[in-house]
Amino acid sequence: MLKEIETKEDIELMVDTFYAKVREDALLGEIFNNVIQDNWPEHLGKMYRFWQTVLLHESSYRGNPLAHHINLPISKEHFNRWLELFYITLNENFTGHKAGEAKMRAARIAEIFQARIYQYNQE
Image (cartoon, rainbow, N blue to C red; front, top):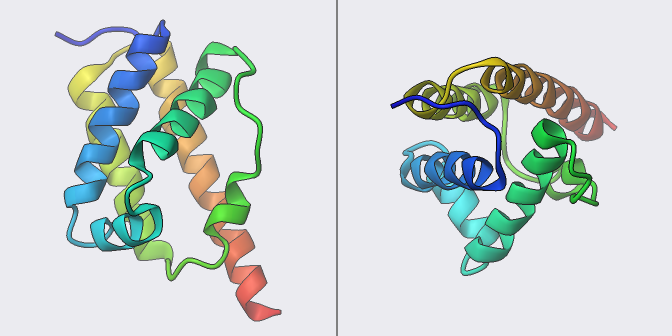
């Protein structure tokens, strides 16, 4: 049954389900698993706080996510797949305004990260 994103538990379901897909993905899995290694619980905790801040306005995340991605071997293809898996996760589990907001925010994040990584690599 699809539900609204309203609570910390909903955020955790979204993040856990999404990253389970990422970890197994042929394109993204190796990159994420190599960078995160055995630190998945820490990474997931950061992602819970990030999305709680974005979607629930709880101001629990502090940090610069771009700094962690700037040197990764990723391109538009990777961001497209990341977004595809994110949208699939939302469509399988959630409905409503916050799910739409999550999709919009994820697309914006992907766009900004791609532009900044491209700019960084050109300098």
